[in-house]
Length: 116
Image (cartoon, rainbow, N blue to C red; front, top):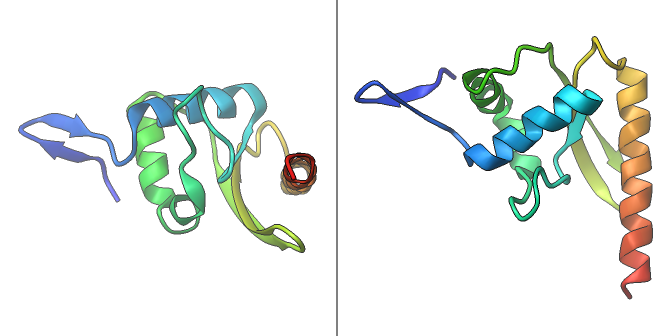
């Protein structure tokens, strides 16, 4: 999907602050998942966006100057559910991105347990 414009003005598909946070995350670490918050108080894009609107995410990233390569993947984790992620293959390979996702899920589960 291409960037939406109205009267020559580019309209973002998602909240610009979240996309800017996502861009920063990808440039620093080369990895982001659907549960991470990108920027204090800005929230996450969520699994629906990562799973079904990847082209819109990429269009927004390109609109604000992200030039890296991106690949995506997802997996179901017992006790957590599905998680989707995008990564820059020039920074990490698919196996490293999946390992990063597993660590993130484990950390999230531990944090949830500690809040009970």
